[in-house]
Length: 225
Length: 200
Image (cartoon, rainbow over all chains, first blue to last red; front, side):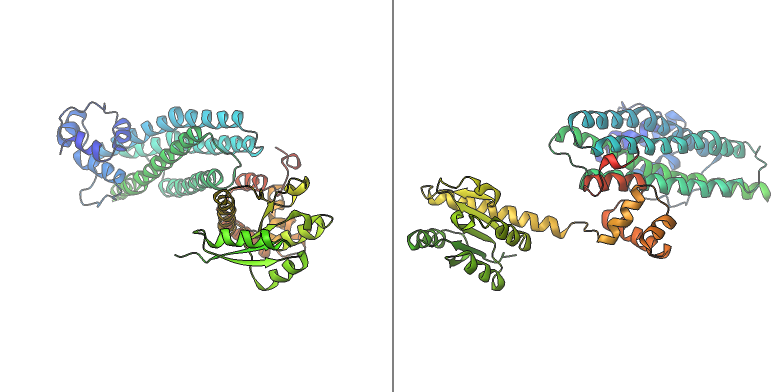
C-alpha cells in the first residue's frame, strides 16, 4: 500500500509520520519501502498506524528491542509536539479570547489551562527523565531496580487519568458554561486544537499501555529467567 | 414529532380587536387554540386550567398591576407576552416580551408570534438539559470553590462527610466537571459565586 493513499484516508497519520521523524513528502513509496528507508520495522509502524486508525495491536508479532528504541524516540517526538506546538497555540487562543471578551471566568480559564499544562509538562518530564531512561537501561540490560517497572506503570496510569479528566473539564466548560458568544473563528481553532491534543495524548497513552509497558514487563521476565 | 398546538390567550375587552386578532390567527398556518379573556382576573383563572403559551394583551390591563403581572410571569415561566402597542403605554416593555401595533400587517403580527413561540421552545429545551443543581448541591459547590475540605463542608452544613461526597459525585455527574478549578469556573459562569469572592 502506498503511504500517500494511507495519508489521504486518514490525515492524522501525518502526525504519526512527524513523530517518527519521517518527512511528509512520501513520494510513491509503499509502507514497506518507507519503513526500510527509515530503519523502522513494518510491524511497529503498522501497529502504531493502526492505533491512529482506531485498532489496537493484536500482539501476534512480538516487538523487538530495536522497536522499543524507536517507540521511545516516537514518544519523545510527540512530547515536542505537545510542548512546542500545541501548548503555545492553545495558550495564545485563550489569551486572545480573554482580550476580546469581558466574561470574568476567562481569566480563571487561562489559569486553569496553565495549571493543566503544568501537569502535562510534569508528566512529560517524568517520562523523559525517569521512565524512558529506565526503559533504555532495561533494553541495554543495565537495569537492576526490581519493582521499579511496576511502580512506574502505576504512576503512568494515574498521571494519564488526571490529564484526561482535566482536558474533559476544559472541553465541558467551553462547550457548556463559559459565557462567550461569537468570535467563532477563534473558538473553533481552540476547540480543534483541544481535540487534536486530546486525540494525540490518547494515542500516546495507548502506545505506552499496549506496546511499551508490556514489552518492558517481558524484558524484565527475560532478565529474571 | 408533531408539536402540540399553541395555546394563545387574548386579553382585550374590545370585541372588534379581539375578534379581528382571532380571525387573523385562525386564518394563518399557525396551529393554535385561541382563548379570549377581557380582564386580568379572567386570564388568571384561565391559566389554572390551560397551559397558555402566549398572551396577547392590551397593556392597559397591566397598569398599576405590575406586581401581579410579574407574579404571574414568575409562576408561569413558559408564558410569553406580546403587547398590543397603542402608542400610549411607555413602560410596557418591562412586562411584555414583544409588541405589535394594530396597524401592523397580519404577516408581521404572525411573524412576531412565531418568534415568541420559537424563543419559548428554545428556552424550554435549555431548561430540560440544564444541569440543575439542588440547593444543597449549590451549597456544597460553594464550599468546594472556596477551597474547603470535605470535613469542613460537612461541619458547616451539619451533614456527614459521606453525604458531602455523595453531593460532590452528583455535582460532577450533572455538570461534567470534576476538578476544583474547573468547578470554580463553572460556578462563576453560572453566577453561583462572584469572582470577587474567590481568592485567585
